Length: 62
Image 1 (cartoon, rainbow, N blue to C red):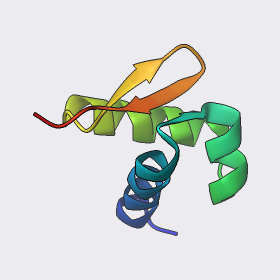
Image 2 (cartoon, one colour; image 1 turned 90 degrees about the vertical axis):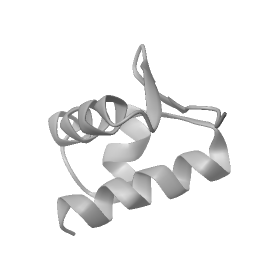
Image 3 (tube, rainbow, N blue to C red; image 1 turned 120 degrees about the horizontal axis):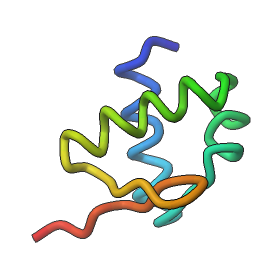
C-alpha cells in the first residue's frame, strides 16, 4: 500500500475509533512502527490528528 492510501486508511480508522496505538496501526496496515510514526507526523503537520504518547487521536473539526 502506498503512503497516501495508508494515511487515508489511518484517518478512516481513527474516524471510526477516535484513537489508536502505533502498535495497532502497524499491525493493521502491515508496516513497521517507524513507518506509522512518519505517517502520523505527516498527518499531524497537516492538522488532521494529534499525536499522543504511543499513538494518535483524531482532531475534532471546528
